[in-house]
Every structure is written in structure tokens, then in C-alpha cells.
Length: 227
Image 1 (cartoon, helix red, strand yellow):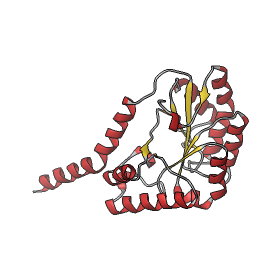
Image 2 (spheres, helix red, strand yellow):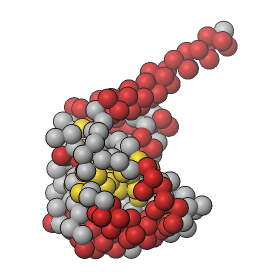
Image 3 (cartoon, one colour):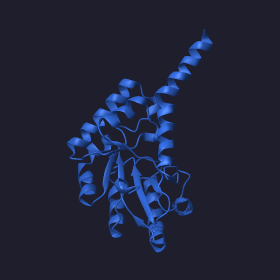
Image 4 (tube, rainbow, N blue to C red):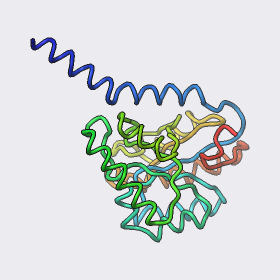
């Protein structure tokens, strides 16, 4: 009997989160944009009152448009930053209500999280078209809600582990330059992270962006990905 309970629990987890998550990752790889000279800078976990304005100033210096996947709870606390993102031509997507891993949410929690996040962003005047789940983990409920609301999933191709306290600005810069190619969707973070991690991300970008530009890369928002 215990074996059947175990098998049933494993099947439920597979059906609820693992299958939706890895199906989404497979479809992202299938749709992967290859070649060209376009990079897609994306930022998760903000907005942050200290770091996001610094990042926006850096992007404005080079006239780079990026995509921000914001945590709705933080967005509600920083409406002026959200408005600034839109005014400066950046794309604003949603990254959940409180950055909760979809694998750890009960169905009713996932439903409430998604709906509250969407309501907050609507109240802030943002027409959300893209959803990036925290940790890249979907569940059946969040996936269904996303499609029901006419939103699209958006994952990434490149990470530099910039949220980690063990990373330096130099190590982040090195990873970004080594891992990016034409068509890469680059996932970085302007909020949360350990020991002021976003400061190291911004410092890395101050050195990395000029090198990308020298290599002939241009930047765009993810709504133009694959077009």
C-alpha cells in the first residue's frame, strides 16, 4: 500500500509541475533564435528602490531597451519605477506575486498568486503580455492561467548566477561574455540576491555592455524575439 501511495504522489508531482516545467523549457529550445547580432537583456526580481534606478540610468546611457520581469509585490511598492520603465521604452512582464516556486504551491495558492499579481500590474497600468515563473518552474494552474489571460511564457538562454554571494562583478562579466551568442536571452537580476548582488550585476554590465557593442551586437525587448 505504501508503494502505491508513493507512486501516486510521484505521478501527481510529475503531472502538476515537472511536466509543465520541462515542456515549457523544451518548447523554448525549439523556438530558440539562432544567429544574428541581437541580444535580449532581461531582469528579474525587481523593482528595487536602490538598484533598479541605477540600472535604468546605465541602460539609458546606451539607449538600450530591456525586459523587466517584476515581482508584483515589489512593483506595488515602487509604482514610479514601473512607470519609468514604460516611459523609457522597456518591456514589463510579471514574475509572480512574491517569488514563490511553482513546484511548492498548492493549486489554490498558485491561482491566487497569479490573479493577485495580474491585478496589481493592471492597477499600475501595465498590459502584461509575458510571464516568467520564479525559478523557471510552472505548475498546471499557473500555465493554464497564463494562457487563459492571453499571456506568453518567456524563459532564458544565459544566466551568470549573479544572485549568488560568491559571484563578483568580474566573474559575472566573464560568464556573460563567454556564454552569450546572437539571439541569447540573458537573465540577470535587479532585485533580491545576496549581499547586495544587484550592485555587482550593474558593475559587470558597465564593463560588458561596451564590449558587446564593440562586437556589433544590438539590444531589443523580448516581444521582438524571433521576429
